[in-house]
Image (tube, rainbow, N blue to C red; front, side):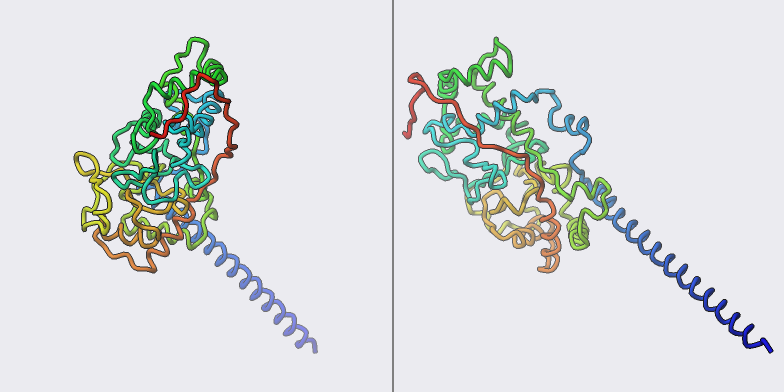
Length: 361
């Protein structure tokens, strides 16, 4: 009599079990998907690290070891170095500053193929101005690697005829003729400081050590799996697989001396006469903020980042990088645009009657 009730009850029990089984299966599948996805993302990050890609440290102690190994950075020196970085009176003409060619509002570069200096002179070797951002992570400075660190590097352009064209004695005379600058040097270094050329340029270098730009790429390597989009992760993987990381590695994603046009002659090799150092080695530029620093290569011959990537595949790796692969790599490179330190254009102290006058000769 009650068989149908029993059958119905059995049916609902079976349906419930089936639904529970389905829910469990769905949950397990989702968990497996998440696990596999996380593992895949982790494997890309691990792969990147295994190829020598290193994030900017988030730990301040570790970061300080990298950017300030000699413990020279202080608030007073950085503030003074910032003023000197923007100070045009360090040039013979009185109108060119470090920021002229390494503009902090333009990705730390100047946006032209060859740097332009004193008397509107283009760089005689047709050399492009590299970015100053993250230069503290380079193993060496200048395209030919002739300078070991930022403090030393700052001395070169200031004296070079086609750049700022200022002799050491003129730089020292200009700064020491301005009482406010002398007071700031004393506050930064002590009352017995000698405000000479080396101290002036070293102070600029100390400021430049603070110009680092952490990005979402760094967050990804630090373990934040969703810091990069799927397309950016794919681009990173392509970047590694194609061999780009063989030169563009480390914290700077560059900054070391490498042989150039190993596999094929560079398309614009005859633009300028730069041939690298005595061994034909050229400093690898950083890829950080690369979308802001066109044109590309040591002689600023490429304006298209995609075309620059394909040319690098040809001349350095001996491979053809397709348009699609170049697009993937560029997608990753865009993720290297980092957060800049907040810079306020400084009010500079006024000259005195004793300050050497501008000289355009």
